[in-house]
Length: 149
Image (cartoon, rainbow, N blue to C red):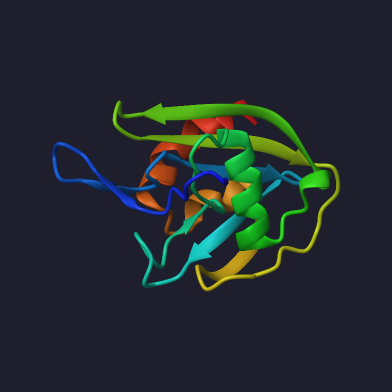
């Protein structure tokens, strides 16, 4: 029997909603040219029209690393064999968590829009990320992530 899907909203005590019954994870891939792979989120999605990381809900018993790599493969065509994990960070709200997995791309690959959650995928030079309308939570975490790259 497989693990249960995590595709569901979690509501916090303040009424804020977060995607992922078992938490969520995203993959921040860094190219050899010091670019990061970003996803322009479909307008109908949560914080639609903003730029963020490919990622999504974790399944029951799925590690954050496995979820981030799986979701990035599903949403952006990220080949799991071309990424080498560097570190991860966790936003833990007690009732919900989001893990950002940071990985180096062994080589730059062409991202593929492979589901309706993406308007576009783009390799963005690290020093140009701030010029895009970022997903609010990614915007909050970007300065620390950038400093660690």
